Amino acid sequence: MKKIKEIKAKSIITKSGLPGVGFVINPYVGCIHGCKYCYARFMKKFTNHIEPWGSFVDVKINAPELITKDKNKTKNKLILMSSVTDPYQPIESKYLLTRRILKQLILLQPHLNIITKSNLVLRDIDLFKKFKHCTIAISLSFIEEKIRKQLEPLASPTNKRIETLKKLHKKGIKTAVFISPIFPEFTDWQKIIEKTKDFTNEYWFENLNPYPSIKYNVYSFLKRNKPELIHKYRQIYSKSSNYWHYEKVRINNFCKKEKITCKIYLHY
Image (tube, rainbow, N blue to C red; front, side, top):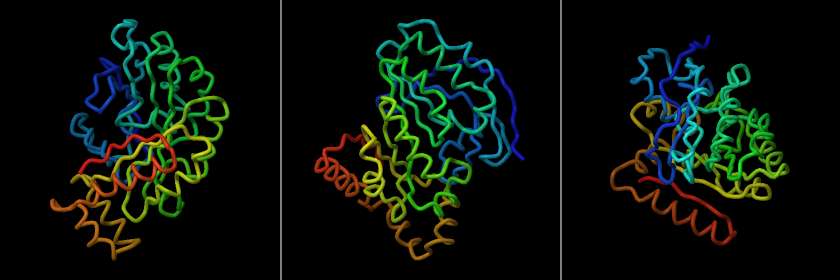
């Protein structure tokens, strides 16, 4: 049983500390996709939730009303939806918060990036077309559906996300694939690129970071699927490891060879 609560927010467009991102909009607190690796569970300490991450959502019902009419605030700035929630998680089909926010943002015409794991994003193609600068990024880490179901239980299946990319591209919407997080030995980013490159404008990469709050989930997943990798993961995430440095070089070299536009956010 998911706990849904309607709340009123004090603000909705907030400054971001993410590289290259001016502002973020998070229409919801929490996300019922229930991704086992989600770093955003740190939000619990700011919201006094005691429920497990993935079992609650706070709905910022007044969010559309809070979109600023001050064009100077977001002029030529990048707004990201969203940094700690999915703006198209299933509950969006009921509340339409993201859609109503988009209608207000059209007046401001920011550079807009949207990241989601949901094919519900197709609903708003009519609004995306009204932005001069709009990129829809589909988060995609796993080709194998058996793995995807374990780590992203309530998100859209991989095949639906790929089909979503095709449909967005066909409608003239700029698309990106956000390969995040990269799970060593599980995320075949080359295969993801091969399957999507004909209808994807650019690729974004980010590695798995086993924060203390998700470390148990990561190692439980390994134990169930490939226990022989536990030692390798411990090496990868040791202070002396250069794994992500070399992975960044591999990604860069591959993208240059294939003439693929990419943005790499690996931290190590």
